[in-house]
Image: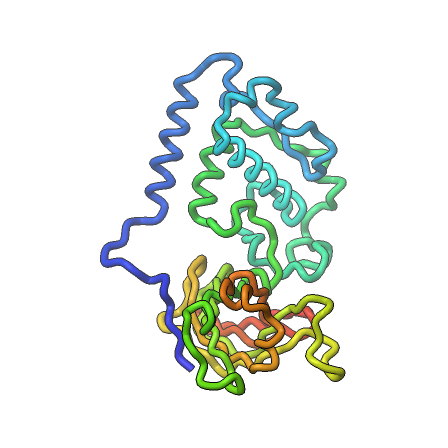
Length: 295
């Protein structure tokens, strides 16, 4: 099966980092020009691994926090949350060589490769960091431009790294089926938040159903749909999405309401198991029953 990648559009490319850098430099310049003692951008906030060990950034900035725009407040909150994740998973929260969002988080941090050399969380909590707000805003703006789907750098499970979304069904496209006994062809998007471009997927998809829904006495779990080897041309780059077609049996379609079929984005769908081939020749294996492994 051949799938397309609808995210590759355009004839001229501009370096992706440039717009974020220009905005960030402007933000830094404005902050530097305002040297008022109560300017929150010129104050520092303390961050530790244990969020309860230090006051919130609002408490640290006091009344001056209201001088930050809503966008700046969100940037600062995201920056602090991102640093706390790095505290938990790395020896040095400023060490960007480890991409947390592509760690396999199905096991606790103590079992990850990085944790073999990192201090324990209590040790890290004794060494909080202090960051100038203006610096945090600039760095976070650049980070979010590079990671628009995970601005806090939250470690993701494999299913979260390779997210699925139903974007169209025959009902939503106002297409008439020849017969209800034939499978429906759903358009599904695979978003790649992994570390490498995705070239091929083979496996099964799971459609979580309401607890009151059942497909019969033999169905005690969510329905699973088999997917034949599906190649993405061009490969799905990190942060991009690729489209493929899923044939959904009528017995499964019947469990969704007309409203859900007309608004398919509300339908939950995840990779249940399978192999995701990457452009660098490696592969990611998602095992059934939510157990995952990488090889």
